[in-house]
Amino acid sequence: MKLKLKVWRQKNGAARGAFVTYDANDVSKDMSFLEMLDVLNEELMSKGQDPIAFDHDCREGICGACSMVINGRPHGPQKNTTACQLHMRQFKDGDAITIEPWRAKAFPVIKDLAVDRCALDRIIQAGGFVSVSTGNAPDGNAIAVPKESADRAFDAAACIGCGACVAACPNASAMLFTSAKVAHLALLPQGQPERMERVRKMVAAMDAEDFGACTNHGECEAACPKGISLENIALLNRDYLRSSLVARPERAAGGGD
Image (cartoon, rainbow, N blue to C red; front, side, top):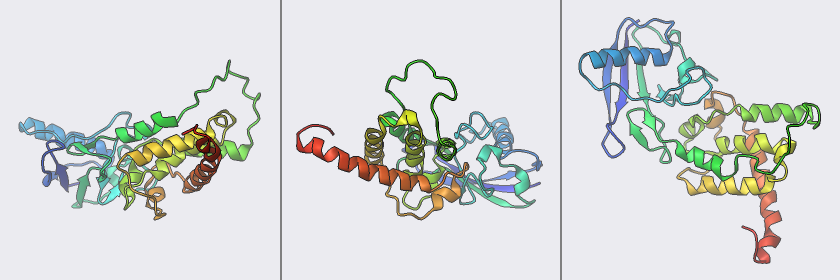
């Protein structure tokens, strides 16, 4: 296949960026999208030109590093697929493809298609873990977990933290990401002791970053490569309301958050 690629190029976060058009020739339909960019970069370097910077790591749809918007859609046209698992058979000979980075204030551009997503890490650091002592590892069946709760927790834990939800949201909200990290612990027994404190801290960390507010557009769920459900946002909102009510007597007495 022959393709025309319109790629966002930006030297650094302080520089002005612009789209640059490249011709990609002899593209195999069996290539992944990132392999196609690898071939283009090899050609650019052979000409002494600067290769296109983009994030990648596992290339197996697990790490969430391959953050890019392809023809206006985070991770491209195929539903529930990361950019690294998107194959060129999804495109046709002669297609024009526009490739750009996540567009969100909280994700400043580092270079070209690579953005700084440390804001998501800071949300996790605020409370996305279990810190209470759990003792030795129990037997697998020692703590009974209802199957429905286990399934919902597993689905929420599938979030890979890529940030596609933020890139797709017209408000650049991180609610789907935060709710997935809150929900997968809130639904399990190990997460109960810190459940109320966790949701308050993680929402506060999210608000401290430059993310927008959630207005239930639903674009986040549609763009998520792992199909994380909006039901997790409903769970987060319920827990946050409950945690606010629980914390009120503490504040009135001069303690708590």
